[in-house]
Image 1 (cartoon, rainbow, N blue to C red):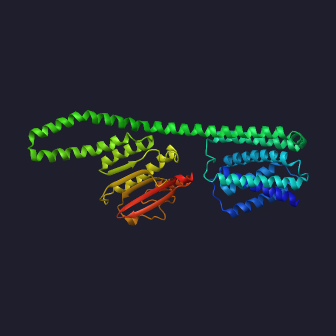
Image 2 (spheres, rainbow, N blue to C red):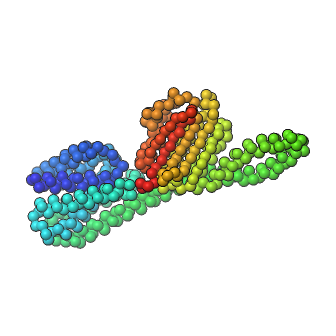
Image 3 (cartoon, one colour):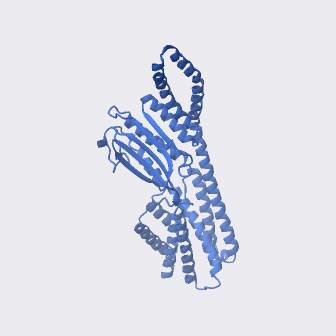
Length: 416
């Protein structure tokens, strides 16, 4: 009885370790996890002692894991049964290795569980930087993958319950088949993830292609207007004297050059999302007489944020900045956006004037529902931005100085 409980406790700990390895976005207090392990191990031991159906064990695991990690049910089922497949493959492999040396069933079981637990902990530590992690995909695909894992697991358990000798006498073949099945499932999952990401990227790229075409058309128009500029300057030369001419040409060219320069610089930005969002906001800035400046380096956030995440962050931050600077009481209508690398860190920085410092609460501004506007549907922009930054283990700095607010979102490149 005690030996079985120890094995169940070790097996449950392995499940939790592998869960944290695969789904390392889950953040739960260590004591809660230890309590959950104790509860599951006790219930599993009771089910086994009473010789109840093994399906009850799966129900116990899934129920507790869903509650403690607050996961989507289908995701929970998929991750749990995939972990079961991995655990079974490891048990089969180490049983083949250890069986000739240890004959006692309980001792052999405990030794195997301890070895698998050590491997799970090592793998968990190695995967701290999320090189392997579970990512959300379409529910229909989740159901398919979960169903496949359930079928494999149930098939194994039914054969074991019917006649364990079928597996014990062909352990090497079963282990090889099991490892191949896991490998195929893993490849299928990552292939689906890759296709999903490419589809998302293509969808967003197409969405922003309209803005990119507008940029190209505007540059063509600017080239066409060059003839008009020449004629205008020629006219000035004919009607103004030398003293007035210099100042008139300077003022005329200054306004045109500044906007032309900003438009032309967009061409050198590789990321379609950044390029398109900047162009739309430059048009907005011209409409509201806002001084929008930017400094964009290429390949700063491309490997960290998806197109959708980058779009979400930039649109929220720039919308908030414009909402602030176009207020009547905001005198200096300045916005500056930077996406740069500094000291092995990727930074997304936005700085803008603020109308009233007293309207801001740094402790609450990233909370769900916080807003300085009296509109019930607003207040989720910065909350969503914070969620994305936290998801990728980023950092947030907010400073208010001399009537300006500065948001600095950065990621440590040396950690991942």
